[in-house]
Amino acid sequence: MLTQESIRYIREFVAPRVVPVLSLYLDVNPANPDNQGKAYLLRARAALEAAQTPPEIGQKVLEALERNLPQARSRVVFAAEGWMEIYDLQVDLPLVQGVEARWGEPYLTPILYVLDEYDRVGVVYLDSEKWRMFEVYLGEIEELPGAFRAVPTQEWNQLTRDSQGRRYSQGGIHRAAADTDRFERRLDVWTHRFYKRLAGLLEQTIQERSIQRLVLMGPKAEAQMFKELLPRRLRERVIATLPSLPTPRAQAGEVLKLVQEVLEPIERERENRLLDELAERGVGGLDQTLELLQQGGLHLLVAPWNPQGTVYRAPDGWVGSSMEGAVAHGAGRIEEVELKQVLPELAEAYGTRLEFVRGPAEERLKQTFGGLAGLPRW
Image 1 (cartoon, rainbow, N blue to C red):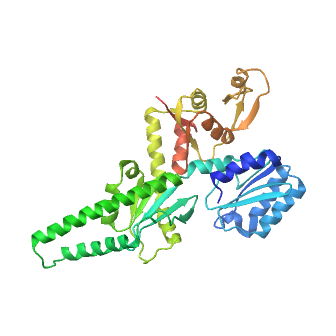
Image 2 (cartoon, rainbow, N blue to C red):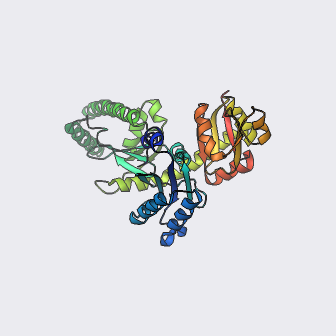
Image 3 (cartoon, rainbow, N blue to C red):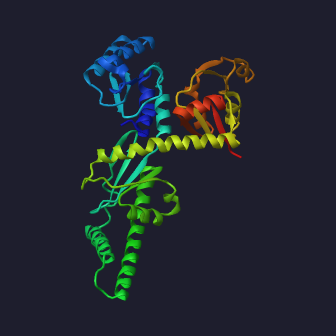
């Protein structure tokens, strides 16, 4: 998996030693009709030639692509003399006509877009025998066996027995009402304390893994009780509560499929709410948004998933939509650069959070806000 650590390795360790380097991004999704018959290899060959990649490096890359059939939606390749790294991703990249290639400095823009677009999602699976936790990121899932390891097996067993006892007593066990009440109170106190302990372990894992959102899976009553007992800072991260899977021991792939079915519509709904907020108090348009961004006045920058067009960068680093504006920022060489390339750089330089929108929200951003918008800090 291509992670933040991988990007840091390429940018800080590899680049200073092996530049120039080839950066190749390729849509290899087998579900895409344009990829039938390995058509992506033809696109890769044409892109490598257009990028003026040295023939010996380009040939090695093509041979690697031919030899290692992808089981993914996107493929990323970094290569130089005597060195090659290949990453397969289970997500789409913002590519024009399914491919991008650059020869020179490492070109990381598509990956930076993906890392900004996708949050790490924690999934707490309330299993009847023992709770489990998964992390969903970039279309892949990983089980985190250490999340609740500190809880002894006997305590999980007690939780299961008590839960069954509670349901049985509610069905009409023959005991005095006062005894039943005392039993229920003891049970509730123990369960409350146990869930609080689990919440503490969950928060520790969230901090360690930088998880931004949570999904709870399990019986409705138990999941709702656990959610209510979470600290507010965790409760606000819960974006969905889903039922348990019918299989007794759910596989990670089954959990991923169910979670992905709800993540996409939730994300699209969130994007539309964001655009509603922009309509109320945001700024829009390329010129105005870039100007306020570079004045340090935006806390959030909203861009289309695949922004088009070029901008001009002045010698002092200022970026604008016109050559005249760049010239006004000092004498020297004016550089014409792609808008999609400078947006992550500008957002990082001015401490501004960068958000991307897709589908209907992307079209709305282009039609209503001129293709770029932001929320002021004040």
